Image (cartoon, rainbow, N blue to C red; front, side, top):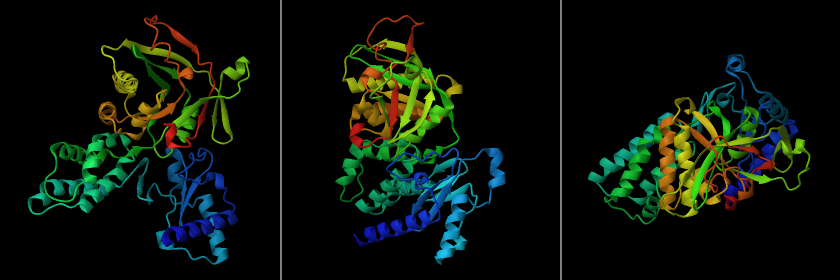
Length: 408
């Protein structure tokens, strides 16, 4: 309790010093809000007495800025020198493309737990499976520490979470020691260890030029897409990539009936950020009838997995970041987290994970209500003409930072 309180006090002091240095608090990276606008400004993070400044630059600018001190960093250094606050000069990093920040390793455009640490975790798992069990009993602390370290690495590629079903976590919670590991648990943990080298994210990965949507009804499903600009996709990602969750998509509370307003999309957190003159013209790519009835959440998951398979048939779609809309919060939650406590849904999450890991593709998700879902009609009305194009998505939408996990 004392440590938590002391850390809170230090954070307040450090933020006060940053304020004296003239740093804008709107550009501070915080875990409970969307990433600050970073295209035209550097952004920063404060943790106890650590100060990290981040800047997005092109490859052409990279060599010019390598080794240089950032504007925010320079202001903070000058203020601390004026106040007589000592600095650890040997630990200072300036204009680096490789650094460790709160357990995350930045290596040019790749971010994740460091490669060496991931290799050591994988070797520790293999030692526990095939070495330690042959000479002594394993204990809960060892396996829990290894699983915790692995889970931290999986945060940078959430698809790998699906290899560990809820049964693995329940088994470990009741594990008191010994050498016996259930075959299912052993195979899941072994798969997770083997996939550890893939637990990283490429920040320079290109966007697919479309936003996708899928929907399902008790009778059938459909998926489709609409062209979207890179600027709009980047803005959506800025809100969606908060703790690995999904951005919430809502209709605007009051919409002017003018055509110009119908063609406008707004991205908001607590206040408007920017408006894009962006009509969305969705065209459905495929519609299909279900052979067997099932729970609607499972059908929603099936429709999305079919969309992913369709999308990845073309090699040119590999190694992309893809935006996707759901109107089923339960299905969205499973795919956004990378795992589900439902075995049936987790099976679908695993299918999607296998496709995305092999193609080096990453999805980011949005939720919209059923009335705004552009694939709602194609999933219910059969057949639609193959050249049927949905008219402009006439319900303008808002992208909101998620407030509670219950929204997923």
